[in-house]
Length: 436
Image 1: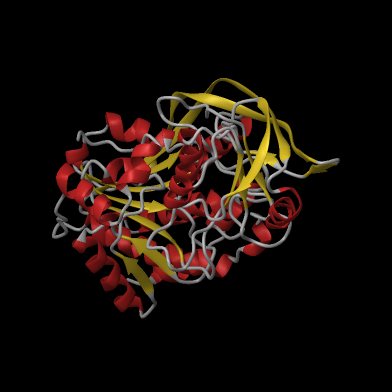
Image 2: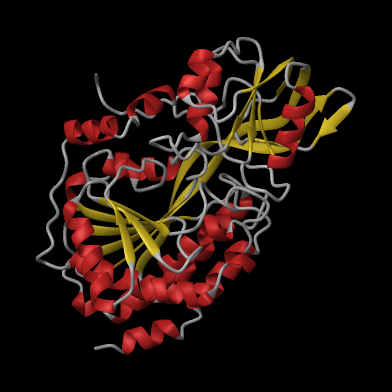
């Protein structure tokens, strides 16, 4: 039966939902816009035939952006606060620490300084160094403030949260500046005193995860996931409106193939991903990990035509993705490495087999993501539809009776993280979940 493929190629359900999401003024975690987007996603899942569509609320640390500034000499440079930066002001010597690698902090004296680092890592470096890792190296080194300099051209200051699960508001003021502003600061003001000023409000808030399901009433389930929230500075089309829209399109296609599902498929669109994976951690902590067969997490899809699936060392996941790619004669790139930076991770860290599926794109880092340029015009309905076909087939593959991926122990996951040199960074950001 191939009718479902043609229906998916001609369906407007996913794209219409994407337009609905991006038309919210903001989907910032804990905002009214995030709540409306979650409700719209619940309703969309119900309309396409998924059962028991509902919201599961949870408390979060809310944060609202005010005005921020970097004052240098007699100039005021454009910037934006990084979410969950504390409000405050710091004046100190500007130290440009380049890429802000761990060894850069080890070799430099930044105690009491305003530290500026780039948002990328050099080609020769063996791993990506996350923003929060750079921030907490700055904190541990005694810096007074943190400036995060984009590596992407276009006068686009980057956003992205700081803070930890235990202390969700960061310890020093933090702002993002564009590549161009960063170059100007480094050229004109490195070694001079500059002021970083952040105005922001922190208050308790509520977020929610969206749930629905299809298939037989089995104890075990396959989770197809995305996140509803987005940063407040842009439409959040790529990150991650497209993921949630694709989840809805996959649910529509699977509803037509429900008789083929041997295992229950649960759809979960998480809230509060952008502020520390709060929604997925809420769900993973209360779920029976043994009853989750696999997680298919869609975060960053549709940005390019070819899917890229991180499989976190679960061989069976790579084999399943390869089988779907071969069946449809359509490339899917599998990456066996660990990638602890999206909503699959609270499950994978507990040994549950999980994918992080995104689109393969040119360049390093997030590209337009986490900037003002994350807008709908950069995406195409064709890519959403093609990828929904592949991901629907992959979900059926994961739900088949014969699919039984092996789980990993805590020691195995920890060893894999250490082998990729990720353990140190996760410890400094408070994300290391394992006893020493």
